[in-house]
Image 1 (tube, rainbow, N blue to C red):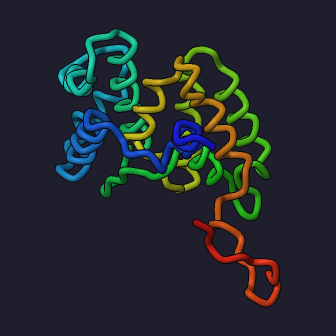
Image 2 (spheres, rainbow, N blue to C red):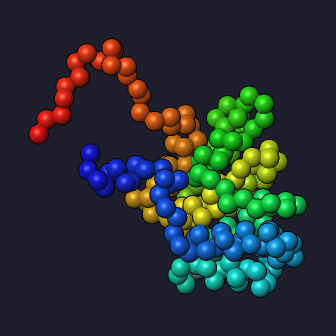
Length: 199
């Protein structure tokens, strides 16, 4: 396997987030820490742009309209998740990993039919599925589960149309595959054919 193949198969959550996405997340977290409920409420009203919307757009690394929309919409999703919360969370994992946390009781993630349908709708969409993403964030909030990493979400959505990035495929994989637990361990007694290193 080449280095390029190894890098592309790394889950999004294993890759470092971009500086612009981290800066956006840091600003959003400061709104919750500083109890700036007015700005958070404005961000939850995406149809009427006010100062907080332009501030979110300002963190976009480019002037591309779609890129700017990603930053504005991630700020909206953050505000939806944090409505009524006094402690901010940067989240963790990709959206696929976060969706594994949706559900109640023993039925979570792929075992929860609603979560499975929601992820299927998200990953099968050619356009960025903002309405379904909002529903996923609302479900995580209702279940009192951690959201995805906001920084990684901004980066993933920025690469949504990049076929090489395969964002929707990575999200589906993270949702449906069992969590990674590291390489399988074999006991020395069970592995009698082990050879030493060769040079």
